[in-house]
Image 1 (cartoon, rainbow, N blue to C red):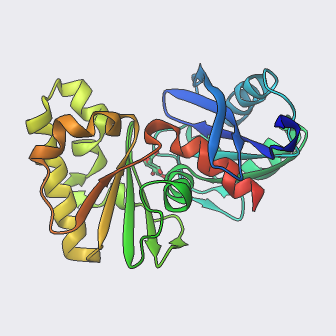
Image 2 (image 1 turned 90 degrees about the vertical axis):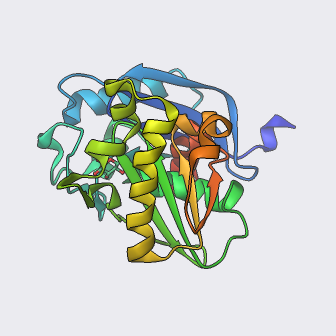
Length: 248
Ligand code: BGC
């Protein structure tokens, strides 16, 4: 039966680690465990993509691959570099990934990838109206959907809050760096959600990133007039969404 499974390689490049796995793109399921390696330092194009290729070489070959990346991606090119080496700017990540992986590769923003997975198979399944997916990690990633359709590259983690980038104040990294407990961190998240609410009036927020695995613990402190749902795939959403993007 397993010969019938259509799998695509999904990779999620993060500020601290690179994760990858084979995804059954009919069921939206990760096949086996996620593999992960530390993001090389400096996180420049060649070493990062070499690490991606090394990770991929431990898995069975698929026809195509999707690479989710923490920057604005236009026409396959990285356009920003908030938590990745600045030498990425204007690099054609799709072409580089295709060359290093030896197969067709799609390159897209990491939060957009996570949002695609959640809207298709996860917390956003069947949701209409305006949905904002948020990924809390090294930065804050966002993906905006209107009636299920993605408006790509929204960089709402860089909205200004208290005179600084929202992600410098409310990302999961900041919680760890400052040793904030759930109530103190969620107070910050609430301020951030309120700012988004006044600007975009979403019907629902999907809260993602590895931290969403602890949703039950911090949910009582969350407040928003929009519905708030925990991401179904938590820290795996980027990998699954990258594979989905490569399959379509
Ligand atoms: C980047 C986004 C990315 C997010 C999450 C931000 O710093 O600007 O492109 O989606 O981090 O990784």
